Length: 324
Image (tube, rainbow, N blue to C red):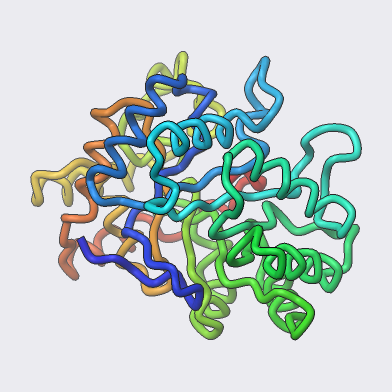
């Protein structure tokens, strides 16, 4: 498996990133450890999480994912084998939100404590903060880099204008974003393709995509309203049960059949072929799911495959609210 350079960071990651949003939510401690073990043993190395995972789940406070990852790394003694990516800035409680100089360092410290490490490799602004000047945010990131608490700064859910402003404001005392985490998949294309993708290429930003499988829809397991019953991602996946969504599933089925593959593998392989994308993020809650998506790195799509998928997926809906 060939490693990929993550933009200008100097980090090398495998072509697939494990999405840690499931840890402490739909995957318990034992399952999370088993999944992480299998992922690392297969030669993959990058794990994405966030402080807010999984505050959205009933009974959770946030920090559950980071806590489990920290416990796993400590129990295995493998921190040096992991490219660790986390995010901060979203609401974690009263007075704990945003990208200002008074909160961002506190959010980072809390993440480091949960992760049981002295640094993270990439620390992302989870979304833009209109209440804080971008200069202040980048200075806060730079202070964390100078202190050795983070190696590189990046952002998620930034528009082209927000990303361009952040890149223009970078300087000697201000960090430069080196990684972008956008929502991007075969159905959600408008918010990344075009200006944002062009900026990433022009400034050599690493790109790791979230919702790479459209909340599970691109696995092909949701084809009728009845298939969504009991799913933790039903609300997110339900919007894709449309003529366009079903047409894309048909195209995925056709390509998958040609390669003796699955729709999930084809969807991830398509992302890996996009010139602006370093690696997609994908989650799994069972070892069978994980083994399936890991095979995507071995799938070689033809130009005919790519044209068919591009045609079926073009004209997707705009992005949903920030969630990655």
